[in-house]
Length: 259
Ligand SMILES: [Zn+2]
Ligand SMILES: [Zn+2]
Image (tube, rainbow, N blue to C red):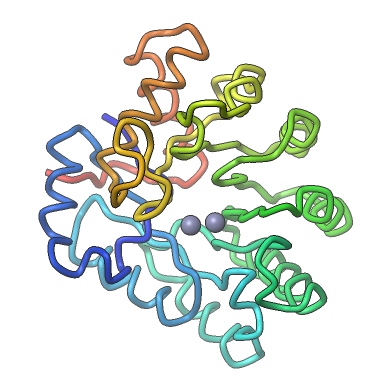
């Protein structure tokens, strides 16, 4: 069994065939999928989908590019939604200094407020980091990471940042960009211990080789697992077993799974 820890199945790219995509993932052995929200509306959509499929789980949260949407009212609604039994994390939250969509100060405020929420409700966080590794680590240290866990998703930073992330006790997950030719990420993955790794696609984006350039989907975590097995010099089975147990432990996924 594999666990896809980062999908955006509510996007319109899946409107035509969402059921088949989820069924296809299950047939490929991907029995649990975490659907990741980017704002209040998609937080609700993630929960609705999680109610429909046994093996689907949800997160709630506001993406740094949408940070202006976080105010006391939306924060209150997120707090309510976080109590739903299939909500397993707060995310994706963090900082994005690549796209200039939202002032840095606003992003930082939203990130901190959602870290407080995660601590309050006892859920792990899914961190989005785009050209903002230093800033994010500074914020996490200043907030204190005791009692806080989570993952740096779609890791594309350097080795030094990866080391600091692990010092803070956080997990690291790679998407399709790990498989791209000329990627320097395999060097980073090589140094991450097996018990800190998770699998994700970030679909519909970042399809891995050999599907690069096409729409990505949860079944494609298999290619990420294969690449990781090659980098870590272990069997495919070993990678799937360990990343599955890492994801179950971090997100408290229990036994619910796709048929
Ligand atoms: Zn992201
Ligand atoms: Zn994402």
